[in-house]
Image 1: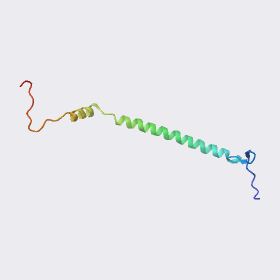
Image 2: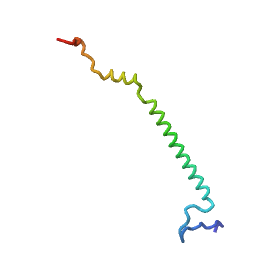
Image 3: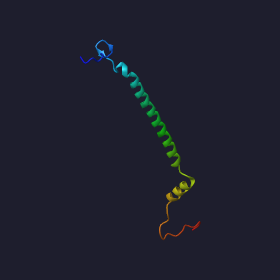
Length: 84
């Protein structure tokens, strides 16, 4: 034998998931991962909100879009007058 202590067992014959000495380290790693996930979600939420604000059309852009959607008269066509 190498002199290493045996693993703790949760049940008879089944080794524990994490040896007792590494439980604080495993907890610290999980807490860091949880914090980074929270931070990532916050950054994405702020980025989506600011992107949505910059993509909102202005009144001028709406007017230009409406003017562009109106049909243009054909070339050489005479303007339509009120009465024939």
